[in-house]
Image 1 (cartoon, rainbow, N blue to C red):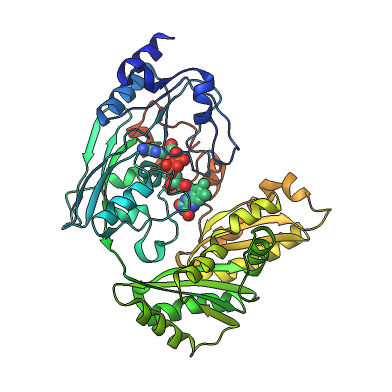
Image 2: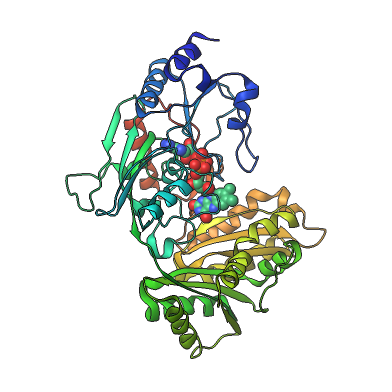
Length: 462
Ligand code: FAD
């Protein structure tokens, strides 16, 4: 064991310092198995003080640090490079909920707590923590903060950035920033916690957060609505907002091809009708469930649509949600695809689809476009695969396909990464599409906080 690894071991104890390659291997491969790195060692600290001492040692010795949460990230941000020089700091033991302040509607949790455990703690206090992702049993609060995670209820409650009141962070030199405030108002200068949200571990290591809680909704009403076009779908978004205001919690857009894939690959799944586009619409409020469903049915009766069903029981609701949630699994079973996680103003979605579909069809005739997503907050998953022999070159030419999609995104004032981050997957796209002044400010901040470039090097800014 090297003297440096011995010093790390002295901080966390022998049971929590992994240096054997067979032990570190699971921490060196990302969720999608696109990136395989090597680590000097993996440390599993159990307190903020231990994290700070590890980072201080790394700063002293010039050792790169890779923060790792649940390792469910989809951009390779938590995977070390292949040099074998980095210390991976795995946060899973720093997992306590430090406290719930029901009167302040806030909860303080350590960064290694899973999202599910935070949701459960909020529920036990009679409150809601609304961030919800399919990976919630495994992903951690620190990872959610560092990727500014989104998910299924952003339309109503916002992303992780909007759900955060305060942070505790270990800076690249080992100092501890205590910005763990439960305040909703604070005009004492710059809001420094914001620098670390969405920074993918490149500016510091988050050790705890104070998060916003909300009243738990009693009532939920869910409908699946078929419409003729993406234009019609976005018009529905406005109409639903006009009628139901912030009771509109979910507005998911699904192209028919997605539902056909679900029927084909997920046993027992049946779409309720065929329509060019479908909407999964969910309302929630604090009132009576039957009344909310009646309101939705009554309103739907006055609208024009291809077809619609309204869930009359929890099992019917689950079946409708399954159609939406099984799309990724069905697509994976169908074969390889090129995935894009993109953001647009919701109003620009129809024009983006028209332009991007046409540009891709011209470049890759027969390309199959599988589009679905959180259209209520402007986030689309826009995935490409091919439908006939002859255009397999789509995969040989993945970067050209990406450039076509991202150029159209840029023309519609969108972003090439919505909720999965830049990681090591998209650093070159950041250089191409980010506003040059914004990029310059990002580099200035990075140089000021981490002049030795030791915090998650190679990620985000490259
Ligand atoms: P990791 O993957 O471990 O790390 C992600 C990044 O954060 C890395 O750059 C890492 O270095 C950094 N990091 C982790 N912990 C810390 C810390 N304590 N301090 C500083 N930096 C840190 N994402 C969505 O936004 N919405 C979705 O709907 C969604 N659905 C998903 C569904 C599935 C099935 C899967 C596999 C992933 C999904 N994701 C989704 C992506 C992923 O779950 C999120 O990005 C999640 O926030 C990552 O959390 P994690 O703890 O796994 O982070």
